[in-house]
Image (cartoon, rainbow, N blue to C red):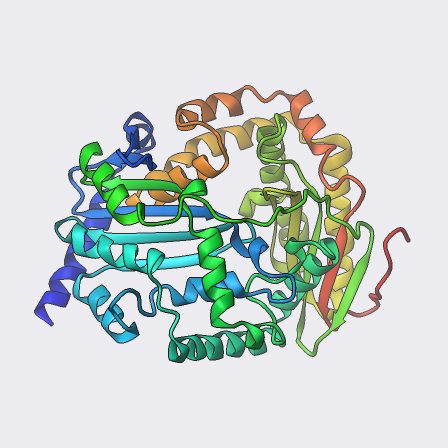
Length: 446
């Protein structure tokens, strides 16, 4: 008990110290480390932290699930810490607890990702657990069935969760026949059909060094990190056999899908074409979206839908740039009696922004806020590691943090109007789950 309390105190102390990290410090101290085995990582060294944070990512994600078996990558992510090498699930979890390790795996549509948080003094045994999980997962029958049961239980709950139903319905309609249209956590039909060979095959194809990106933050020098990279990731295959994923513009624009569900409030998901992260107009579009619906209490959508009319407790929009598609998405939930009104108002505000762009005052305030708030992404080692990894995935360059505010400053009113005109080009696909009064489905093009 004393050891656990001490460990908890150290972790809390590390987090507290990390809150004093600044954007400038993070930007100035990023090192590109390349191991003797050719594995690369970005490092922010912070000697005051007894905690080491490492985030990593492999290209593939749920898009590499077999077409008839969505959920394979999701199950792999849930099973990697359920026994590896000579350690069964119980022994592996005991080692994690003994060394105060936080080990996480997850899957998105494009990436299989992981993170580890560990005490610097226990780096070697902690990273050995990560090495085993990635390169020698056991995928034992009892663990598979236990995790499968948990996933199926979650999927059953989703059948009565309006938010999850709206999301699934939207993606299925927007990307029919494309990997993006399949749910990342699988279906009630696909998950029972996933076998151990599906899991092993996915791990062999996706968990390779070819697409590995790594970010590390904490008390570690470049030489030590290089040795750690080879020890931890060096046993992975050089490359795998990833299935090609085609680029796709979302479909279904103009359609409205209504899914009946006996809940007091209807959930609304709408989306259209966005702007890719690699597009020169992205920064301008990012600012425009902040004004429209990304700025929380200051956005147009919040002001019109929530403050002035009280149609919903929350409403927001955001840009989502996937590797093979770019999206503009918005969401809210409203009472059954006022869902139609909320949808019409949201669409009206989106049209107004698309047609006219933001005002000069809105643009200036948004730019000031987005520049000033950026440092909040660097106030803990966990946030810094996450940000460094995302910058790598977006291929923005190791100097992006230094350049970002200048890119925002450079956006003109004309840039903002042009970027606004590209949002939801072709119309919005809307899905509604609940019992909306006077609202019916309509096909695309009506």
